[in-house]
Amino acid sequence: MNNKLNSKSLIVCLSILLAYNSCKQLGLEKDEADNSTVAAAAILATRTTTATSTSTSTSTSTNTAPSALAYSGSPYSFTVNTAISAQTPTVTGTITSCTVSPALPTGLTLATATCSITGTPTVAQAATSYTVTATNSFGSTTATISITIAAVGASCTANTSTGTTVLASTATLDATTGCPTNITTCMDSALPAWIKDNFKCAIGYVSGSNYVFKSQNIPNTKSYYFTAYTNNVANTTYPLYEALPSGNTKAGSNTVISQNLTYTIPSTPTRGTGTDSTQGGLVSIGITLNGLAIFNNAAAPPDVLASEATTFDNFQGHPQNSGVYHHHAAVPKVCESAANTSNTGACANAALIGVALDGYAIYGQKCDNGTATTTDDFTPTLDSLHGHTAVTTHFSTATYHYHYANDTTATIYTLMGSFFYGNKGSVSN
Image (tube, rainbow, N blue to C red; front, top):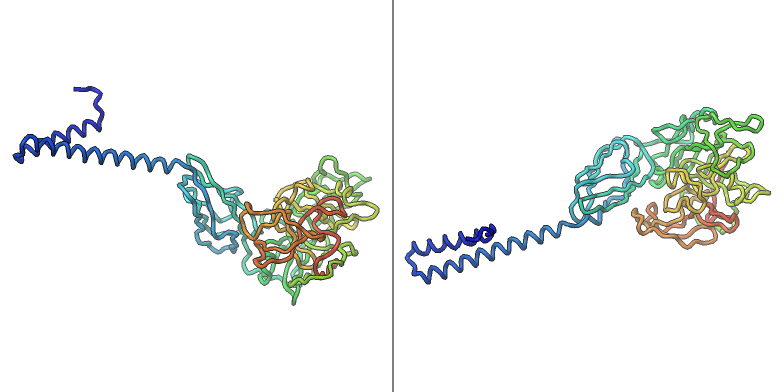
């Protein structure tokens, strides 16, 4: 007998023997028994081959990385202290673990086996992007989602204070609001979602046919301009002080000073002549998501903006001589939640940055194509005013809006051009 007989051969042999004995017991002749035995062996062999083939096919189909991870509800808008329904993604293939970056908002959790998001958010926040990664032993797939957490029934009016006056010498940041400590952040519940879910560090409410914003105009970042000067030497001990970017120089003796800016912006913007100058002596020409003034594409004479940009801090802002901190160019704190000193490289995305005084929104360098995913974002062809008409995730009907783009007057990238597209509102200080 062959000592190397494998298990399948042994099974076949045993089956033949059993079949032969059965036939013999039934009184079949030898030839008939032999034929029945062969038939039984053939059936058994066929079943064994089929089982082996099926097992191999199943194993091959699972030897692939997951793909096409997608959350159909994104962008999400949840409310503080309200439990969310489980947000479970679709995915092709199997997953064994899930991770997310950055960490989900306080109160929300990611199921590590299914990538499902559940929980009850406890802290309000503006729209923030998160990347979820689903993995198995053969690879991974990702999905980018956006989550906004709205405050509960926020109510603010013309009588709502912007908070205690903030001083450069003692200014700190509130870890809960993300704004300077003692500054009131309140966006009234009557405001449209694109404003109330994204703007902060200011007061916002509806007044007739206008949106009104009130702001102390204090940056919610560190800055060289949180300082004071003694004999032209900056005080470097203030809590929010930090050095200028390498190679930059200070803007004279200018420092951050609390303001009382009030913007009255049309809630239904209308197209103007396109010749209303943004350089017409306005205190500000718009407001950023973090409550800061937007300035035009020109510098105070005799300077030019391209050279004045060398006085920007690490978040590309600086104050003028009466302490109004402002942005001509990128707002990386809003676009990227981080410092970025590159004029052309910052805000290279489709992030909402702010709103101009004429009521039209301002975005980063790209347009989001009306979807939450970033894979179809594109760099738009713009008119001379930095704008175009298209859908965005905030406006499902094609609407005019501005983009952070190269400006021929400034010779650098700026938030706005030389003129407003629409009929502007008003601003005071």
